Length: 336
Image (cartoon, rainbow, N blue to C red; front, side, top):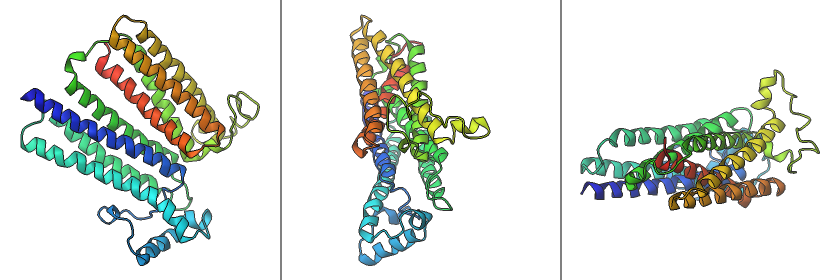
């Protein structure tokens, strides 16, 4: 009976993972379509439905007209164009609320019926707290673009995305431990896997910086930037440390370099795993090599296409899949 409960709880956690993955991809589309500042208020219940009447739409549009983005970027936008950007932000918020219900309601049920495996309750409560914190960080991010400058803080964007990824990885790991407890400590090279995980995580962090600063729109060539391996603007900010956080060219360069380092680290790990005798190692080795290769190609294609929406969204999606594969290797399957 306990084993059956573990599988039920694990399937619920995997459903939550699928929902969060969807939210992250929709969040990428929201950012890429510059829709994130279209809803200038945060209403937990009322935001579940979009405006349903012409008067309601006009009211939302009037609120947007008072925002810095409309006044400094989109002045003259008509209602039809506003509805297009409003849709993505509304969908992103709606999915956040839906996944909150998908997590919270079954949690209360499993808790009341005593179906939660022993020792898991504290982690499930922490996941609930982290999900609520993630929602707060989302509004905290949006508010930064509603005051003076019509652009969200890239630090808050990275915090928002990073918290979502952390929650996703924790839920994923918990679900796999419930489904496959006997597979722990099955693969070697955990230190290599941890190094690859850290490298990919920093790459994703700088990807958020690139998105928040719109740093992806200054150079569309690869591997050179303006005909140089290192852009001429690399040290333009003073003091020097600001270049690594605020300089658009430097941030894009760092994201590129970290992307290449991530490819090397993950592909090498995949090859090492494949060359072992274990069938499981060969499978995950092929998976890692495939994911990081596709991710690198998508990153370059996104750049060369001047950040085409489908390619950029797929680039973020495969970054998440690569992270999940590395979390699986590092914390579920690998030896200490």
